[in-house]
Length: 96
Image (tube, rainbow, N blue to C red; front, top):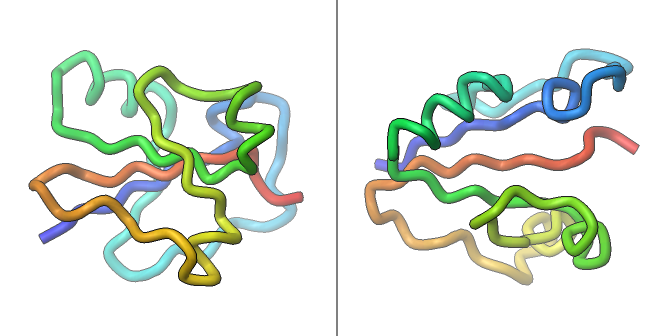
């Protein structure tokens, strides 16, 4: 079973504020940068998915992350990586 985490942009980029708290789907939880760093340092099996546009991805990415723009996911153009026991971690720059 896939595990999903969402790294909040407010935690990735201090100083940004959510207009309202995001509503996450059932089974998805938000983590902060410290918890994400701990998971990476511990060698946990993660797939980091950057949901920025391709241009934004070239300017702002975590080493080893893959780019699947949000619009592509929403429209079904791109597929998530197959479940290989890794936790999927999504991150972006927050609401626009």
